[in-house]
Image (cartoon, rainbow, N blue to C red):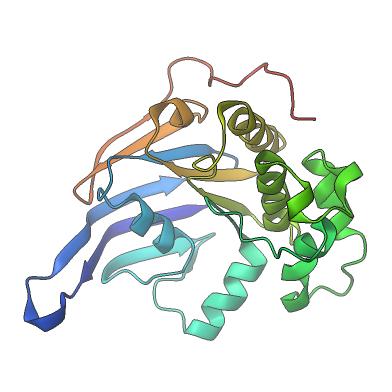
Length: 237
C-alpha cells in the first residue's frame, strides 16, 4: 500500500546555520491492513515521518508511492484532494470545535468530499467508535477519551484507506487511553490500515509491528513476537 524509498528530509536553519536532517535514507513499506507503531525519542524524526506519510510535508529526496502512485511531488491542490480521499488523521490535541456537536464535528471533512452522497456517514462513524448515544453532545460535555473517539470518527468519515494517529493518547488518562487504543485495534481487525506515532513503548505494544527511529534513521523494524497488548480486551463503550 505504502512504499518509501530512500526518503530524506532536510530543514534549513535561519540565518545560514547548518541544516537539520530530520529523516535520513528511510526505506520501508506498509501493507494494507497492518497496524504499525512508529516510535523513538523526542527529536528522532517520527513526527516528520508522519507528516511525510500524510502528505503534510514533502521529502527533500526519495520516492513515496501510495497504492502504486508516486505522490512525492504532487502539487498542493492534488495533495489536499488525495489526503481527503485516502487518509484520516488523529492528533494528540483533539481539534474539535467547541460549540458544535459531536456529529457536526465528525461531518466537517464531508464539506470537501466529492462523493455523490454523504448521508449517514457521520452517524455511521460515531457508531463505529461506540458513541451513537453522544451525537448531539458538544466536546465540553464529553470526557477526554470520548473526545478523542469523536476525532477518530472524524478521521473515519470519508472511509479512508489509511488512519494516521499522532500521539493519540498523549492527553489521556490510562483508562481513556486504553479505550482509544481498543478502538484503533478494532478498526484494524476490521481491515483498516493504522500507523500510530508514539514515544511510549506501552502504547507501541498495542501495534502488530514496531518501527523505531533514532536521529532520523530507522534502527529497527520488526513484527511483535506476541499478541498485541490489547487483543482480547473489552471494547470501548
